[in-house]
Length: 226
Image 1 (cartoon, rainbow, N blue to C red):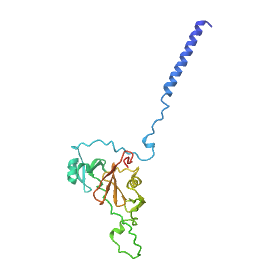
Image 2 (image 1 turned 180 degrees about the vertical axis):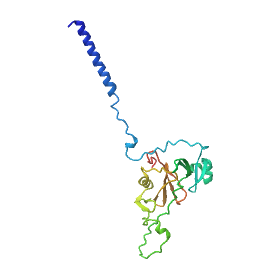
Image 3 (image 1 turned 90 degrees about the horizontal axis):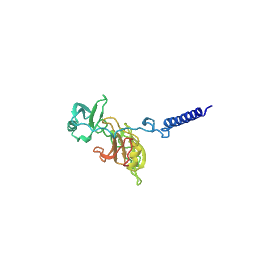
């Protein structure tokens, strides 16, 4: 074979090898990084509540007062009808899928407080009262190491622990749980403090009536501040 042909073949083979290397780098270069798993494949519930857009206060939405639909109103007007500040309203989609506003926990008022065990072992029968049929077995009194932690199931109180701190009780009751429905709430108790999980936060009350924010909830339904 002539020398010129050998040179041409050698150059051609080199170019083919170089092209193969370049193609291999192109198709395999991005495979070293492990793609992030989609939210649906991760354990637990992930709810993006923190990035909700700021509502236009001039926009009309469905307004609820005392749990009843009263017509369309702007957010300030709906707050005025309810006699509360605008930040005391929950805004979200109602059962029709329309944007609506209602006072926090408007559709889930606080349940009656549970009975407290007093340690009376006299064995004497006690007269029944209406409240006896609305609560679960009386819970133990507060101990030196913590307070009883209870969950309200919708019909009765159930003990989660006989002795927990307030923050431990909140984590036990609500860690990984988010309230999404407009005006809904989940209730619990830590000693004599009523706990209420509502959208984006957990609240506390010492009189089972007036609630204040205890901790904010993040998009993963956790409480970073506790």
